[in-house]
Image (cartoon, rainbow, N blue to C red; front, side, top):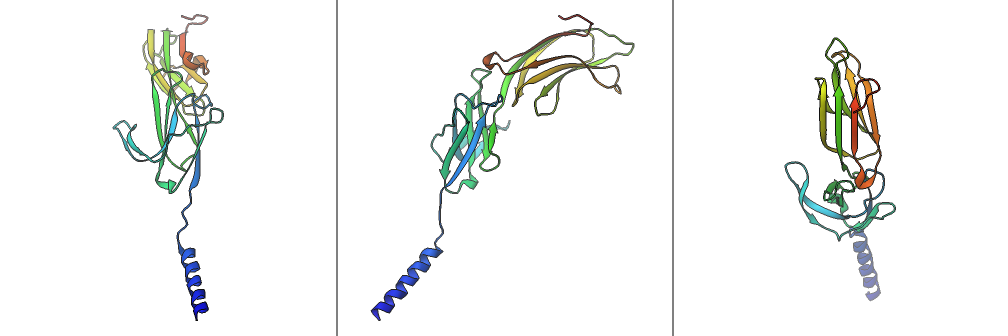
Amino acid sequence: MGFLALLAWLSLLIFWMGCRPVVTAIETSLVVLDAHDAPPASGFALLVDDVSYSQNGTPQSWNAVSDTLLWSPITGEVTTSLENIGSHHWLICASDPVTPGRMRTSVMPVGLQDTCRLDVQVPYQVLLRLRQAAPLEPNWHIVLHRSGMEELVLHEVDQHGGHQFRGQLLTQAFPLRLQLRQANDSNAAWTTLRSTTVTYQGEQTAVVAAWSNIAYAEL
């Protein structure tokens, strides 16, 4: 009877062990890239939960559930192993390579996407000298074209003469192309009069244009 009891006890033990939930740590990874397709030169990543956001949509506070993680300076990949990662978020912090002192903070659910592409802030300045060249009063647009993204009308101009515009552009890809377009009435097709293309140049990256719609004339 002792031997039979031992077999019964071993059978129950094996059955109980087989029914226990298996908890395993799952490895997750993310590739962090700047707008010029290279990993940020500095920064860190965290796995977080309980993220709260400010009114403008930027992450304001969070609860870290991992140690500080660093991505590969060559590939931008950051990896970690954690249990129950489905409810967590990646939090990426990195300084802007174009605008000194600006820190980018991005939050995304784990598993939603495999790449975090951070934006950069690029200064721009446009000088215009416009002349009415048709009986109808023309309209001009200053248009930004970012690689892989929709075009954006930065400024609308409805008066001829001299104009100056300046500000900051946010982009996640290079090159940037800025264009001066004209339409002689609301139903006319837009014609590109001038264009400039800017590639990534580190802290020296800037969009500067001085345009005129007078033939063979520039400011």
